[in-house]
Image 1: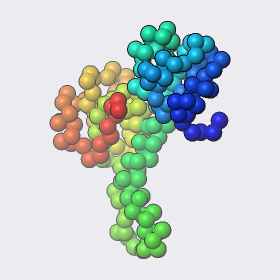
Image 2: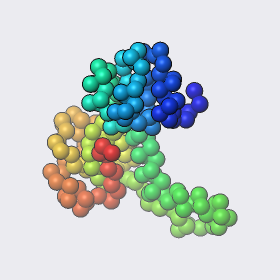
Image 3: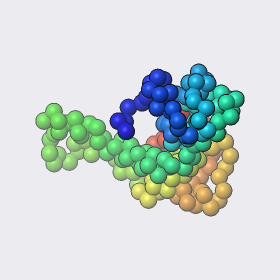
Image 4: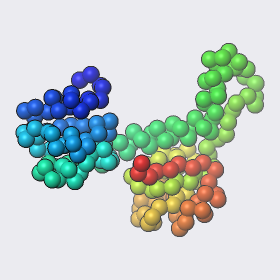
Length: 186
């Protein structure tokens, strides 16, 4: 309830008489914590895509089920990706700093305008759910979408992702990208 990650002792105390633990990536579910969980706990449910913070082997050895939420953050993460693309293109951090430092020059035509995203090439390294969702958003801004992935995605997914163009190797993708977004585990 207090939005702070529980330390080991607090987590174990809070797990008493519980059937399930709902954790985030901030809760490191190590082998020793899992070993010391009360026998009432039957499942560890992480509200994250990844589950690298849970020692799955230790959970399995204790007979616990481990679940994750693989698609819970796709839209939010791709929204943030688009926010960062816009901020980089339009030099938002510099403009904000100028306002805060009282050095903003008003309507000077070439002062920190940045560049349009339209007709720029966005390279996406890793075209899973989040990469595809970002590509879909970026295409709406007129960006040309290019990607590299271990495998080419299905044609209907390429169409959804702004008629994305596949590059069989990362070097080819990097060579044409004017903006680059990396989508990979960890």
